[in-house]
Image (cartoon, rainbow, N blue to C red; front, side, top):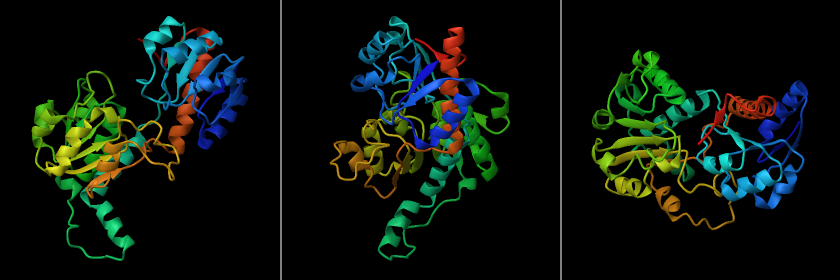
Amino acid sequence: MKFAVYGIFDAERGRLEELSKLYGFEYVVTTEPVGLDNLAFCEGCDGVSSLGKVDANETLLKALSERGIRYFSTRTVGYNHIDLKAAKKYGIRVGNSSYPPDSVAEFTVMLILLSLRKYKQTLWRQQVNDYSLAGLKGEVLGKMTVGVMGGGKIGGKVMEILKGFGCRVLCCSDDYREEIATIAEYVDADTMYALSDVITYHVPYLPSTKYILNDDSLAKMKKGVVLINTARGELFDIHTLIKGIETEKIGALAMDVFEGEAGIYHENRVADILKNRDMAYLRQFPNVIMTPHMAFYTQLSMDSMIQISIESLLEFNQKGTSKNEVGE
């Protein structure tokens, strides 16, 4: 068996070599994302492992199929970048990965704290030796009501951590979990909007969740609400965010993700002119924190993603299916 691993991080190489010795497969690696211009790289391989910063559309999947690729595994939890209908059409089985929720959950709580304690403003001032306190008065997380949109693994871990701070925690989720009910109150979306001082989003990007944060939902929230997004940029309508910040309806905003981040995040663009005007405009506000889609980026997560991706390819190869398979 031989696999092509595209878009590899240095942090993944060690675990990949260990897996190769453990399971006895060959592999080739490249730091480039899989694309039409580098498909020769996967010639002779049984499957492809890829990161999420690629548009796995029908054209690409058809080209992979023509080169004998039957298995495609994304080293991400989300798989909205893959045309599953086209994958099925061309006989390519698709799997996704996962990782323990700790990395993203801890990063989420960090963003909440940075927002409440106005760290960005403080950091800016220190760069010019301004150590005054005027305008830097913060809030205490433990005294706040925090709404969590989504009660899956990451949302659940966030709620567990928040409970340790002493917060009142509200959960809005279609799925009821007994363990969540012991640390949070299940409420509907409108109730969460009305009561929460902070709202953090932990739902997948689906047609039903696109722009779940919009003019209508923001209007139902408290003035000065703090919004956190470590899930997918497409959950937030950028125009709603800009209007919310400008009118001070949004008290603070922290996002690890951004709609249109492909080609920007995870790249060195120091000498480039970035053409995402919405990103450039939004990030200049003192109460807006933006990080480059790095909440997942710990060794724990990287080891888990490469391992699950490779084990999915092995399962596909040996059994024709995988426990991590996703489909249209």
